[in-house]
Length: 266
Image 1 (cartoon, helix red, strand yellow):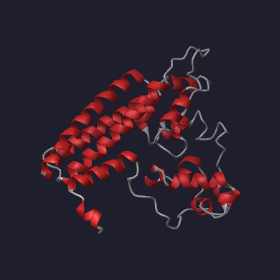
Image 2 (tube, helix red, strand yellow):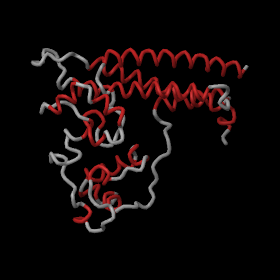
Image 3 (cartoon, one colour):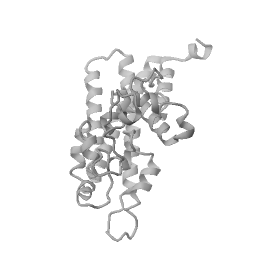
Image 4 (cartoon, one colour):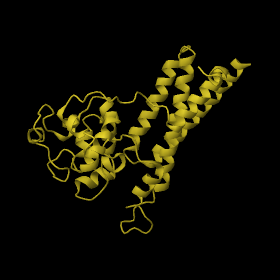
C-alpha cells in the first residue's frame, strides 16, 4: 500500500469511491476473456474479424461488456441459430437479417423480443404513442432507437436530444411537442440520482447496515427502477415529477450521511 493510500481517512475513501461512481469509472465485474463456450463466440471473437468484418467484431465486443452477457444471454437467445454447431452454415441456420420482418429483431418485433425479459419497461412502452405508431405502420422509435443493440442504458444526453429532434423539431408538420430538452433533463437527473444511490449503499454497507438501512436502500432502488420503467411510457410530465422527488430525497440522504462521516472524523 502506498503512503498516499495509508493517509486517506475513511471519509476520504468514501469521497473517492463516490467520485468514481459518479464518473462511471467504478462498475461491476468486468467480463473475462475466458475461452468462449459457444461456436458463435469462438468465431465472432476472432481478432482477424477486426480487419475483415469489423462490424461483427465490435458487435461481439459490445455483447461481451453488456448486461446481456453478464446475465447469461447468448447470441441465439435473440438471433436464433445453433450455438453448438461448428460449421458456419449450420450455426447460422434460422438466423434472419434484422431487416427481415420475420426476424425477432426487426424493428417492429423488438418490443416483444425485449419484453421477454424487460417486462415492466415493455408494459409501459405499450402505453406510449411510439408503440402505437409501430403497430400503425408509422416509423416511430423502437427499443434499439434509444438503447442500441447491447446497451440497456440510453445514449448520452446530447445523443438523446438529437434522436428526439429527428421528429420533435420546431414547426414539424405533425405538430409534435418539443420534448427533447425535457427528456434529456430527466435522463441527467436519473444519472445523478444513480450516483447518490451508489454513495448511500456504500456508506451504509461500510457501517454494517445499521437499523433498517438495508431496507431503506432497497426502497430507494425500487423507486429508481419504477421511474426508469415509467419513462418507457414517454409520459414526461409524471416521469419528470417523480425524478425530481427522488433526487431531492437522495440529496437529503447524502447530506445526512456526509455529516455523519464528518462527525466520525473529528
